View (cartoon, helix red, strand yellow):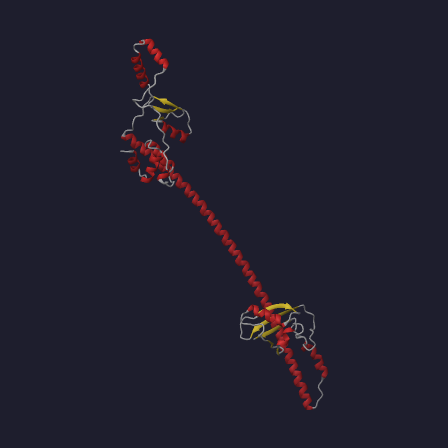
Length: 353
């Protein structure tokens, strides 16, 4: 059975076996097995790129010419004489052949190798650099020894695979822990962002409720002032019809109360100098109102531009504004007047159409 067949019977892939045999230069079963163990798990390269690391054996083969040492030749001449020179040389050659190196031995670990290629492979693998020639001949392995060797190699491979699997499991566990920690951190960040958004929304709603309450209070005050003005007007007209004098003192006393919620628009100057004006703009067709705060010196056209920026259904040049309390319709000529001049400070509700 060839080395290739033995490796295939151990369960190695054919491509890996070919790679190992070519890489070790066909130096035998042991180097190929060592190569397969060392490169377990690595991808098989292109066969055309694999180069052999084998070197020619330097041990002498039977039948090669053997040089006879000059000193040995002189000694043989002294024993056999000049006439026996040929016989002496043959005797010296036989002696050298008997002492011919059969193998190479590692002086550091005592292992014996068949040729220099195997010794070089051992030196590269172990780092040993002390070798010597040996007359001990390496006998071929018996079938039983081969089986024992294969069993040992299988055991080594199983141990190596178990260690590798254990390391991979440990690495996978560490990666899973990192992923879980990253997921927890991301979840914490998301929850924090949600809490901040909820706080902002709650604060915005609270401010809107406060502003709406103020606007409703102003509207109610305006309604009450309008009712009182209408009642006084009706009383005055009734007194005139009946020929009775109308008590101006009471009307004069009540006039400031009626005029307090909304500044007089006749003079064009508000009762107080408010720097900002808060507006709530409602669409005539309904929907969510728009609330903003502008400078009291801003014109009504700037209000129209703000509203046009909030909804595409409004055009600056065609939009109309009106006020319910007191009831008033603003004309295009009012667009150049300021909110202070129009008596809309400090707050007002406008209807846009």
